[in-house]
Figure 1 (cartoon, rainbow, N blue to C red):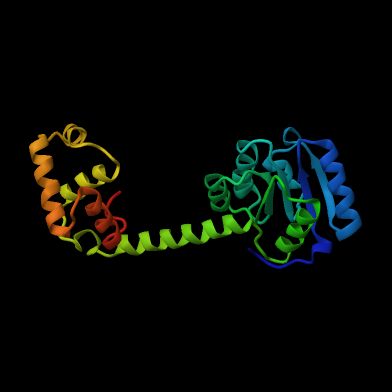
Figure 2: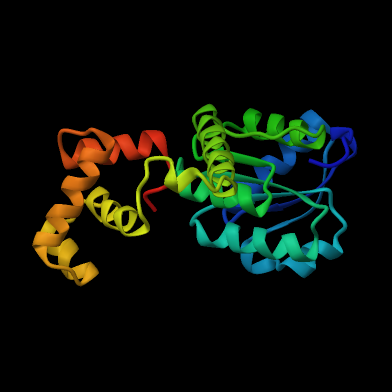
Length: 228
């Protein structure tokens, strides 16, 4: 998150489409937190280079659409990597949230965030904290855990052979996991339906499963990243 900084000495650039919202937030920052808003305007008033030239500590971005703030965040990551970024007015969209995290944002606030919550988020981020809704925080924990397991799995040469599956069997069972029929699998792998049925039956026997769907679950449980 970088070095801590007193919120009262923070220099902020506020980017929001709605003028009334901008003016309201500026007044609240001046009144309640002593934060200095060094620039404020709409998205069309700024680009990443213009913001970088302001030498601000934090950029507060409102969102009327997903593309505008994330595009600017990505550019700021290249032109002003030291600048902290908070997105507000966002949807509770897991994909958008994770993309924002990958791009380096420090705060992610939803559309129903109050002015007090926005000010608190700015203060927290300037003290070196990260801010996001509890549900999305839980999602981030799950994502990191999954990625670490995946990396560990990729580093383990035994991962895909733990159940004694061949590469062809793993390929075939991946299609089973995707819900394809025997006919569709046969066409996809250029095999006969008879061969597909034999492969599936053999896999079911190997993993001691009663059905193809149970076989998929057994493989996922014992080798979570074999089916991808």
